[in-house]
Length: 153
Image 1 (cartoon, helix red, strand yellow):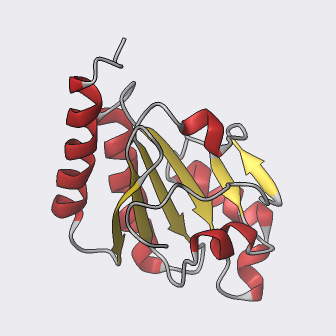
Image 2: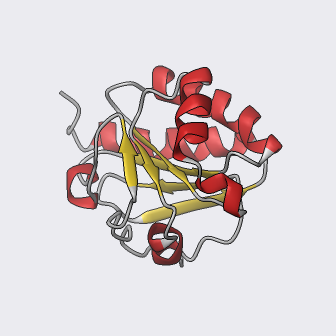
């Protein structure tokens, strides 16, 4: 993906938890999309921070997680569900066992974070477990733009 492109389709999840979501439903509010995998130890710390963002910016930020299996054992949906419950992932979680969402985003690793503005335009990409302060700065920037547009109810 290149900056300033429209958010790719979220079609293709093999399983969804906490509700299904489409790109069209996300347009109108800033969005954070987080890719992770059960076998990724760095992802677990990121999941905690994603939950902080979800609660801190409730009502102003959509938070979506995509489970992207890296190895065959990651495709175990029960293991994904168990970890999602353990880490209190109450936001929509798309399980991408066929890698259709991964391919739409051209995503190559986990954990990764994609920030989109309220128009669904790609504004920031971050990979790895560090730099959460920078990620939050980018989230705040798109939320502030959203607020100044007067879209917040």
